[in-house]
Image 1 (cartoon, one colour):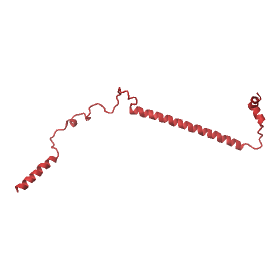
Image 2: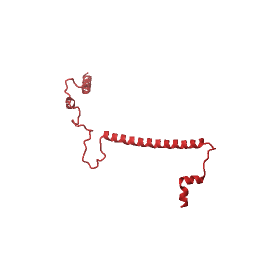
Image 3: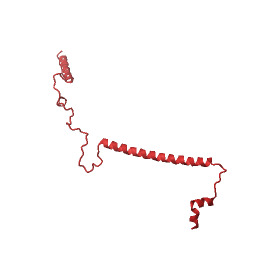
Length: 127
């Protein structure tokens, strides 16, 4: 009987170590203060610059993102310009082909001598 009472008292005492804290307990200093940042009032991720000679590539994230957007836009504009120029060349080529195909066979084309005379090639060859 004494043994069972001692064992039950031991279990009750050890179980009280895991019991929730009492209601009247005071809050810790971090939770009690108005500043919830444990590192102080300084914003920890804000870039303030520095005097490190190796920091030439440091910059604000917003600035780097804006630079990347500008570069991406320039690259896209250049690609669009090249694509449009190729499209114009293709249209001009197709227009020349259509002109040659639509030309009637009865139309006089002229001779090589006439062509050379008009373009001034014959003058260059005579010199």
